[in-house]
Amino acid sequence: MIDKTKHIEIDQISIPFTQFIIAVNGTLIGYSLKHIEEKSFSLSIIPIGLAIIFWSLSFYIGISSVRKNISVRLIEAFTHQNPWTQSKDYKQKIDNKLEELSSIANKLNKYMYYLLYSGIICYLFWQGYEMYKRTFFC
Figure 1 (tube, rainbow, N blue to C red):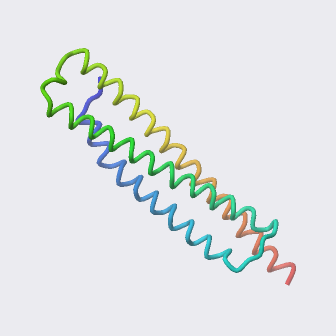
Figure 2 (cartoon, helix red, strand yellow):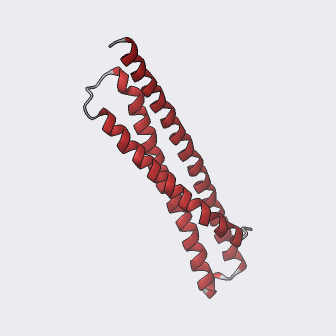
Figure 3 (spheres, one colour):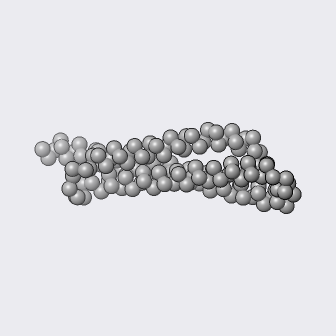
């Protein structure tokens, strides 16, 4: 059984932080696109292209995570307001659904961070390669 007060306290921290990471991903995508808007296609821009793809996926997954967390809150609010949801069998089904949605949201958050960090690594690799090209091939 879910401790609803603990769950709500965690959501009050995790949802705004997830929204912040979504904003960071959007900013990184825009910043990276600005770097390559004047470049022609070559093998040297593959790492930054991968970074943009990773950040875009992280952005989408972050939004999906927030949607799952909002669904959990809506289900909780709906079940507390309706007297016909008070049967033991119904409560068990609702608790199972809340556990499932919370588990999915946590997995999505984990993937969001993995993709964010993967994009950062690709961007840093691209930046290092660009510095190498400017230093030794100018």
